[in-house]
Amino acid sequence: NLIDQSQTSIDMVISDMHLPDGVGLEILHKLKSHPILKDCPFLVMSTESQQEIIINSFEAGATNYILKPFTTEDLLEKLNFCWVFNFLE
Image (cartoon, rainbow, N blue to C red):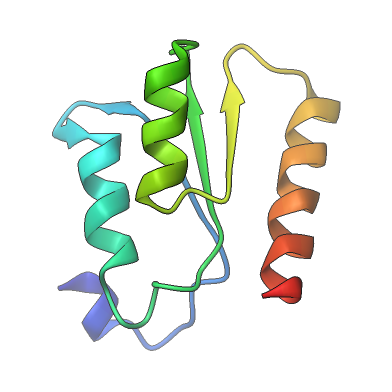
């Protein structure tokens, strides 16, 4: 509802995989199914390093995935990839 009411555009979504009010993968599915956000870059952050979880994130529409804890350089690299990937599509 907030997305539909917003007067601003959303350039990128960054979300943790485990949130207090829901699972990040469910949020990823919901946001990627929204017409405004379907093509928006989506960076998933998580402590989950299991290959299945990472693959599920990409299959759900994540643009990139970063493991916590991470360095500033790692984060910048992932963010840059999201921007470049978005322009290539």
